[in-house]
Structure formats: C-alpha cells, structure tokens
Image (cartoon, rainbow, N blue to C red; front, side, top):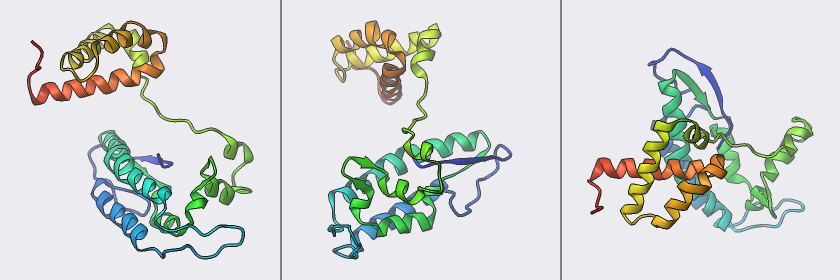
Amino acid sequence: MPAQSASKRPAGSKPDRTRGHLPSTSFAGLLGRVLAGLRHCRARTPATPGVREVPSGSLINRMLAYDWRFTLADNDLPKVIGATTVAGVDVRFPFLDDRVVDLSLRLPPNYKLRGLALRWFFKQASRGFLPDAILRKKKHGFGLPFGLWLIGHAPLQELAFESVRALGRRGIVRPEFVERLLGRHVHEHPAYYGELVFIFTMLEQWLAAQRPSTAS
C-alpha cells in the first residue's frame, strides 16, 4: 500500500483533486496511463552503467500491472478513500503522484526487484535523506484487529461463527476445516486467523443478501 498522509476536513464535503490525491473517479485514468506506459515503452531499457538491460515486457512489470489493477485500484484505494471520506478526512498518496508514477514507468525492471530485495531503488534513492533505521525497518501493515474483537465480543463472535458455518454448508469451505478454524485456530492465534474469519464472514453475508442459503 502506498504511503499515506491525511488532513481533517468537514464531514460530507467533497475531496479535492490536488496533485498526489487520488479520488475514486481517477482510478481508471491512472491505471490506463500505467498500462499504456508498460505497453509502449521501448523494447529495451536505456543503457545504465552496472545495470543489465531487461526487456520492457518483463514478468516483473506484468506482475506489477496486475497488482495495480486488482490490489490498488479494485481493493486498497477504494476502501481507504471510502472510509476516510465518511470520516471527513482527505487522504493523499505521495507515491502515486503523476511525476513519481511516470518515473517508475521508465525504470528498468531490475531496479524494482534486485534479487530478493524489495524496494531496492526506493531505498537507494532515499539513502542519506532518510535515516538508516527507517530504511532497514520492516514493513508494517494496518490489519484490522478483527480476531481480537471476535474473542472479546460475544455477539460479534456469534454472528461470525454462524456465517462461517453457513459458508461451509454451502460447500464453499470444507466443514471439517471450519470446525478446526473456529474451535481451535482462531482462539490460539486470533490476530492471524481472525482475518480469515472476517473474509469468510463478509463472503457469507454477501451471498446471503444475494440468494438464500442452499443448505438443506
């Protein structure tokens, strides 16, 4: 997920479209620019001392395009912008600024993944600007603590457990796995397995709203 910065604004007011802000209506345009850049960039990257030339249609670029389409445009960004809009907060994504995106499209693929080192180019470019402790720091997500809520709130647990069992009755998840998940795993490791229970719960709630349960 790109780095975020936020500022408070009156609830219900419309977000502006300043540079670096990504309102939902601009997803398609941003994605189109990225995909067009990947399709039409030169067949080989410009020669750079010490850097092997890599075909532009590389697996890395294709995987990144997939990530833009499904992880960012279809999932992370709509959730973040939707939630912050409801809360009356403007959120901006500096790494999705037009100039940063355009630069990223011109980078050789092996700048984006150096062996098994992620964010290699970003860390090298930031060295001397950001403290070394920041560059060495491991990534931390913003996971929803659903598992902890689940253990500590009986009504939520009842709703979630029944939803997951209903999903098992539909034949989507194996019932024996459901019982292991609810009877043991989520209690032993709520922070880890709580996310899976949340996903299953949301899926069942969506299915229930679309059609009745197929269980006998």
